[in-house]
Image 1 (tube, rainbow, N blue to C red):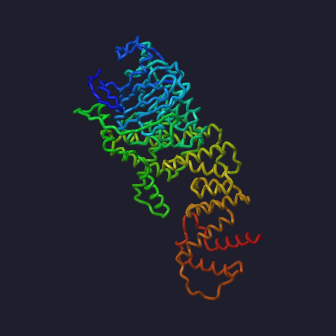
Image 2 (cartoon, helix red, strand yellow; image 1 turned 45 degrees about the vertical axis):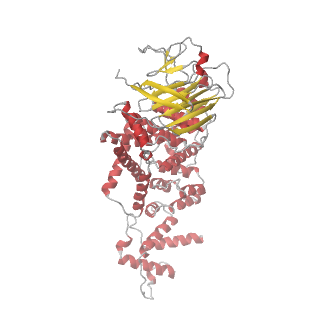
Image 3 (cartoon, helix red, strand yellow; image 1 turned 90 degrees about the vertical axis):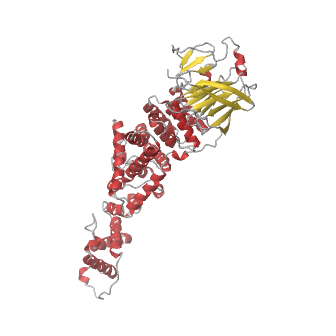
Length: 639
């Protein structure tokens, strides 16, 4: 056992002055609690010590004594939990001093109707990233000590909850490691969080605050994360619209990505977002909370190592108030919009700069594919989708710079791998949600064809994809290449034309070249399909529209091509004096306005052949324009 140092903390609460607390801070209590308790006798090798009570003492007198516990863990946290003696069972007040965060929280729990048989005192247990506060028969609180700022990240169970009924009704004491001492029997128990019960409770609870707390609690357990994620995704798909206080998909993506790399490097809790929520204003039923600032401990140690180094880092963070250290995508958003704007204007920054960004995206996708060897059901990652690759690459670049600035003493290669793992995880979670929905509704590859009616399953998958898009857009997270194509195809299947155009105009559906090309090839030229094709073509960017029009052999597409051609020719046209006589033999129809117009275009083409020649449109000339105009006129006249 490492050398032990004795430390002292002076506490003052209300009118009671607590004397000096002695504790050995080199032992980090990383206990985890299970509900129901997984009890097993343990030959721990530890000597049991007297904690201040005779084992023959009347247990009813325990509630008359104040309860105080000091907990530390491997993350550098230091918590002091204190409950004064209480005379009334109507409500109980206890305090937790988060020294590593610079504040304390005082909780008052309203008990309501009290079972007179239950007179045991309050119990504090250290549970790794949590502290459990347990009053047999009344409540079980699971306080998040790693991220205590928002009350919604802690779990408060009260009343006749199953978890409370199944816990032992005798005083318990946390010891070192995953050990709990039963004061009455003198037995040692090993305790673990019961993931199965937490997941079951997650399915059944109706309160948003409990859903949020349970989601984070399950993910923090860290045992078999792939299975846990699959269970949570199944729950999300069944309850996608059940939460009103937060976005389920957003919170899951952020929290799961955080926990996937948090154990690998310290200080990640200060650098990466833990939750999508910044505030929480909704009250927790039966709980009153008061938060107060407290003085930071004064560290008088010459060299910090291990736990003390991490605690000192936490204190420095609080002391100098560095909330700006948390990464966000604001810089990425600004840079991405700048690159897309330059692309639309035909400009582009240094090709080396853009190539490096796209290389980052290639690394992310390779990293993702290396971790997932099973074939995908959904048709993702089957097209370039440069816009999403740019966003992916920019996020890698910005996050890497962010971590290099603030992670001291960590190798550059390790940071680069952490970044790739983090961004890959974001994309993988989106793919998992979509794969689960695809598998649940038993969709097949033929949904990608337009010449068929939409099914109820396609409506369900389209809905979940729309919710994924909403969640990622507000956080400005990248999507897997091919997502927008699949979303648009399902949108064309599932939505009436006016709804479809509304979704397109409001940016919910993005018209990718792949999706529109497939639409032009699959749909025939019935009156209904003509309206769909024309409505979509006129909403395409000019260059994409010109490419797509060539795929549609129809007077409407010929008309659009002709208009674009005429616009290019006449852009810088200066009217010159012309002869009043035209050679009528060169025109197939004697319609003077059209003949005059075509003659002008022919002259411009002959004098500036390079002006109108552009890729894929070598056969577009004045003759083509004339034929298109005549066809369009014939169509309008119904001839």
